[in-house]
Structure formats: structure tokens, C-alpha cells
Amino acid sequence: MKNSAPSYLKHHFLIAMPHMADPNFAQTVTYLVEHNEQGAMGLVINRPNGLSLADVLEQLRPDEEPPARCQSLPIFAGGPVQTDRGFVLHPSGTSFQATLELGELALSTSQDVLFAIAEGTGPRQHLITLGYAGWEAGQLEAELVDNAWLTCPAATDILFDLPSEQRLEAAAARLGVNLSLLSAQAGHA
Image (cartoon, rainbow, N blue to C red; front, top):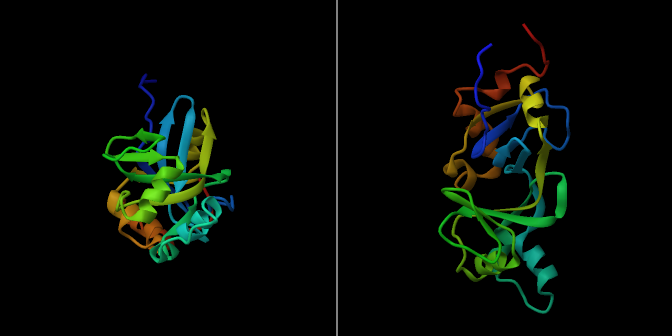
């Protein structure tokens, strides 16, 4: 058997296969923020949770009326871990109190990024989530072996430019896959 270095999927999309039974991930596309020997962390990018940035700002600053445009900025259910914690994925170049540079993208977790977005001084492109998806060491690799996910390099146009309901199909199309043509039955040849 050939020895090879592990293949990590940071800055890739995880596309749930049609037979995905876990309700947290069925019919989702997840952006992998990190993937290494210790595990993986990602944000589900196509599942709005029904809240808007205005709803979040009303909680953070109850004495201030949020700008009207914040009503149309959706908050996404980023995953089942720490669902009370916010994460903002945006292009790199702008740093906030808590920003992790990821290459062409950055992840900010401090409230100042939300206030900047609300004021119109924050990143123009952004994806705001509550919660994240996490995998322990080896867990994601096992799920990949079990054919739970398709993977492809992430694309910022899918992250920021497409309506959320089009992101899953668009990510699969990057692989030339039409998910509606795949069987929901798992099997092995």
C-alpha cells in the first residue's frame, strides 16, 4: 500500500448525499473552515434559520432600532454546535476584534462585525450563522468513506451571490452532478 499524506478539505464544500439521514445535515452544503488531523469545523450555508440581522441586533442593542435593511439580511443555522454563538464568513481584508484569516476568506466571531454590517461599513459580502458543524479527529474521514458527502473546492460566488435555496444544486453542479438523479438508497458495488 502506498503511503501518502492525508488529504484535508479546508476551503471545500461538503455536499450532503441524498441518503443523508442526519436531520442536521440532510440536503445541506457546508463550507469547511478547517480540516486537519484534529478534526473539522464548517458552516452550513444553505439553511436560513428564520431570523434576520435585525432580530439579532434587537437582542444585542435593545435600546436601538436596527436599520431597516437589516430585516432582509438572513441568519443561517450554521450547524448543531454552539447554536447561540455567531459566526460571520466574509472576504479577507477587513479584521474585527475576533477575526481568523482563512486565505481569501475570513471568519469573524465578535459583535463588532455585526454592527459594522448594520451600519454599512462592514464587509459587503458576508454569511452570518448561529452555530457551526464540528467533527472529531477521523469522524469526517469515516463519513466520507461511507459516502455521506460529496466534496468540491469552495466557490465564493456560491457562498455570497446565490440565493440560499440554489447553493446545494450549484455546489453539486461544480462536480457535474445532478443530485435529483442520484438514488436516495446507499449502496456499494
